[in-house]
Length: 331
Picture (cartoon, rainbow, N blue to C red):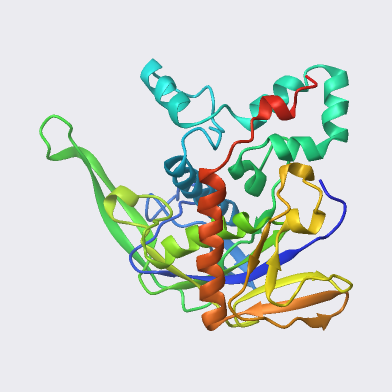
């Protein structure tokens, strides 16, 4: 998709635990706790981290629920076929459309269709649901990249005991005691988020999940039903003061506007809209840096941009009328 760089956005997100947190390593320890956090080697030491793939999965899952709440059957169900009961299948079909990846895989079974899809990535993007447009599918790479979140504070871990509950008596099940090692409250991590060739509503989509993380409405990791995984997140101003957006040096984006992909393309291709832009409350001046023009949104400018982008996200989802069957009519 798009062999050109039209626009980009960068931010550093600080995630601070406000309760015990456990993202399990998946490896049983020979001695010690039964469940331990995932670890990595960094600067010569082994330390806890939050995998970028886990964060991306949390973001996507939360945003799929939001989009489905705004308008049913707008986003797809990527795990199609895993429903165990007929009632689950019927409920899924009421709320979600069929998997984008499954749709593309089905079309690509014919060799001529596969070649056609490879050549027409614009139609693949246009036929994809909002979640797949941002996070990707088997049809193409997504617009957002989330790096691993590394420690920026002292690492504090603690051990906790757990027990299995007997479903009949409601008491502790004999022999079902286990130990887990968790990251303590007050530990901070930072991750980098990068958006490339984004539409304005996609920026709003990202802001929506960041707002819920700031409000401590999203838990991450294992044991969330046991009270684990409570975090608070905020955009860090450590590196550049907030959100940084960029465009190529010869661009003509006005300082009082922020353009999305549709406005840059200005031809309705890729299923975008020509009115894909926001009018800012105050102009934000661009500064040349290498081949790019960079603009930094912080303070009130960032707050106003967040509110406007989230409003655009809600508007686009509620008005979503793109039908993949019509976009891919050739097949």
